[in-house]
Amino acid sequence: MLRNSSALVVLIMIVAVCILTLKARAAEPLQPGATAPDFSLPSQEEKLVSLSQFKGKWVVLYFYPKDMTSGCTIEAHNFQRDLPKYDALNAVILGVSLDTVESHKTFCSKDSLTFKLLADPEHKVIDAYGVSISGVGPIKFAHRDTFLISPAGKIVKVWTGVNPTTHSDDVLAAIVAQM
Image (cartoon, rainbow, N blue to C red; front, side, top):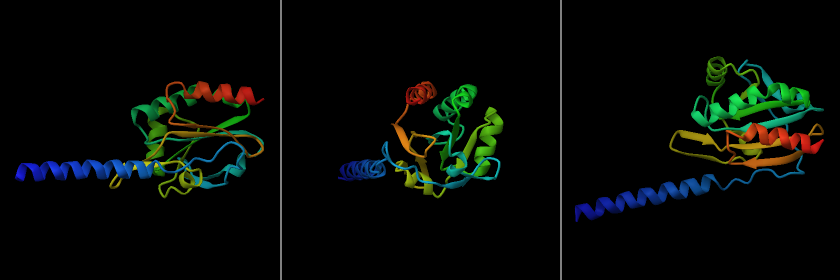
């Protein structure tokens, strides 16, 4: 009898985690054509960065799960590698996660990242853009979604659940296709 009740408890816990994961995935990202919501968040340099600062430029606003994890590091390194190409296209890269300014400082220093990483631990911008959050208990992370924002401030392309290895190439191709 005790064995069956333990199995039932485990089954209930698995179902609860599945439900929480589905609820976390319920957010709907903003769609192309929408005006990109303005925001101000602190960067790794402890300075506020606002979307409105980049009016007239392409903005690659990418949301990622966690500093210094394998997929996020690959994605960040590829954006860093391609930074001269983005500069040539009048585009800026802004990364956003639930991590703190201190975590971003460490990540940028350790991995020689020079573009802005923005701290959104209260997920105000993550929520405004409809990016899903997952996790259990205190461990939460944003999903890997990217918004390409035109120089006029409109969302022109959205990627959800991106492949960090090829994503920078995909974004560059999308900017070129828009020109």
